[in-house]
Image (cartoon, rainbow, N blue to C red):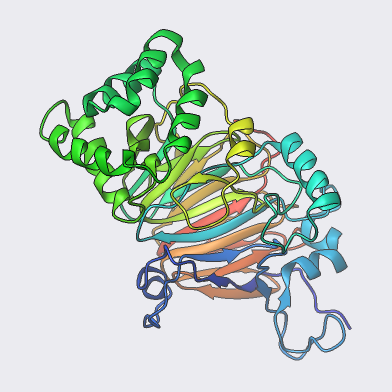
Length: 417
């Protein structure tokens, strides 16, 4: 007999031990001692690379051999799609992936494709490059990967091109002969000069450009406005991990963004970015397509990345939320311009119950602070920081009580509303 899915169901996340992760933030958040290995990400989702486990009722089975053990979320969706996603779901997969991310050092300069680029690239590689597990693959799936980062600690990132005139001014402050032609092109051609700039930097890989930039940034960091000094400071920080990569100058032509806890940053398709340092919750479309340009030991596909980039200045500012006062506390709603996901952060004061809308959709409720009860008439899950519950579409009238902070991810059929 199949276990009922009409109640909150505990999720068991997958830990990703990437070398850029911190050793302590995720274990401490989850109330356990660090094990000595970097813990970069916790995945609460159904992506085939690392699906979370779903804890069904003890002693029940959802297929041969699954009694009492977590069932991979992607398998549960495949077996019981309508119950988990809802009869009106437009796809056969959970449309979003929820993560906790903790970075001790800068990640690669990267970007993500839009849907059409992902479909085209995935199809081409599937026919010519072999299985998605092979190292020569760039596209892991046929989906786009817009993403929202919600800061849990102070968080620094690079996101989107600066205005060309501003980038030209900052690059000129280095006074490097290797960059003079790029500065002139930025001054005369504007955003059209960004692709030639990136191509120039790639050609200087392995030369003395990176070390010259570090020396020049040290001199320039005592001059100029605070933004200039901050950008010059990050050149040395990045070069400490990638001393031979000329993309250490990226803070001079990409926006340097500093988030305080509770602020969020949205990154759309084709936007170059790098997470530099800090811990956050991340919500994205259900994809693992990452195209890298540099600042990494992983596979770089510079040609493909340069083809998908959007060569225009981006705002580089935090996403503005809608904040609503409720009888039980405060709801802060982040609704980026995509249908794949929205994020509601509920600050519950313990005085009343919060209804976890919308009903009829799959939702993931992740505790960030305190101790919370997520329940309906069919069952209850008690969540502490770092713990999450799946709320299947058939789980109706689910409420949460605190005190504490709960992050609720769901799909959003009304983008930007």
